[in-house]
Image (cartoon, rainbow, N blue to C red; front, side):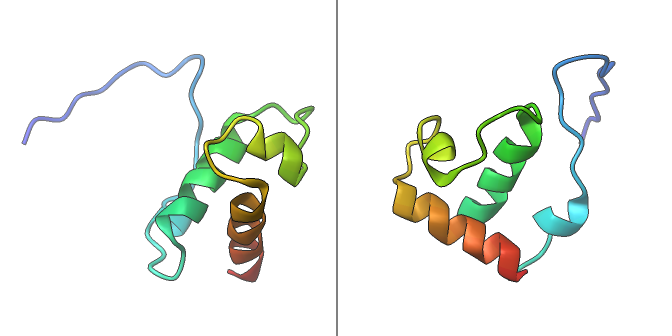
Length: 71
């Protein structure tokens, strides 16, 4: 399999593989964590703020955040 390397000098997010490889965390929660890490610190990290940029409802966001807090 070929390996592609790109120069990462802007518009990328660094995330630990620890969370991505944790089998106890759902894909929905991993995706939300990835999105949250890509946002600026000044972002509105409320459930409503996160729901406005997601397809998921506020209840789904709340469930994913609670899952992340648990793990």
